[in-house]
Length: 388
Image 1 (spheres, rainbow, N blue to C red):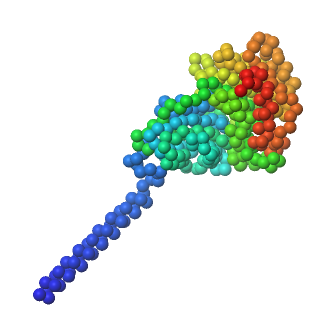
Image 2: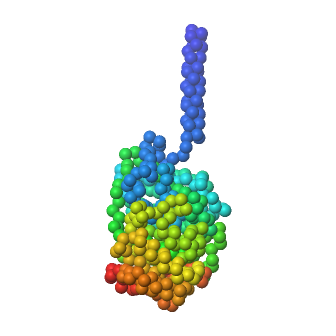
């Protein structure tokens, strides 16, 4: 009897130890899996990847300022944007590749911003080795607008297939079964061409805060604060951008060539043209250059001739004197010479005259300064584009 009790007790103890050992092994296995599985906003079986070959994704890009390769879409232009509507998903993660960015310090990495369903703007600076950025969580069928908010003006933005400071987007991760739907966009296109002022450099700075340090220049920018963007939005156009810190009619600013050549080229190896035309053709082109250099007349004239050649005959070309008044004499004479020579009835010269606006450093407008310029420019452009 005692032997039986001993055997029974031993079996119970054995079973207990076996169960405990099995449980510990299972927990260890789960911990190991959790340690080595890649981090993701969703479980793998719940994910779906939308690549940059998706036609609805491509249709949502702002025209004329994105480079397309087989692996990604790229841009080094402040204000370059995408407006996308997602269906069948509550979660959206942006897939990026920062491995090719070559800047002096991580603080010079580009900044992006986005809004979900027209809500608050979220700003995010890209980081070394960053791959996934959560854009929307638990929001059914979100409409999302993403844009390049700030970018350092001190790196080359033109040489090679993809510039060294370009943002590279590989696509999106969404819930399984989801998709990108065609998003209704404004049919008309407005193309802003300019320098650091038109690109919104230092616009997030306060009045008299000073010139941004080189390492923090990107973080001081807000492309959407630009008066050019505000004008396009007011008149109901979709805005596209070709504006760089340090740029002039004659070139410069990120290694870009003179405007006559830059109109045709996204980069030194990538054309902006299709069958000799800009596709799509802008309905309005607003140029504000001259702050960084007084242009020779021939540079202004040949650039305007090129724009007219590359656009449709109904495109309105508006040249604005720099808001500081710099190069007023040279640009006025050149535009008048072009108008007399070409008989172009849809080319215009806008001079806001002497205006006072708030700046961060005596040159670059703050967001409030851009609002002042916008308010004054509005009356001039209403005469050209009609009231709205």
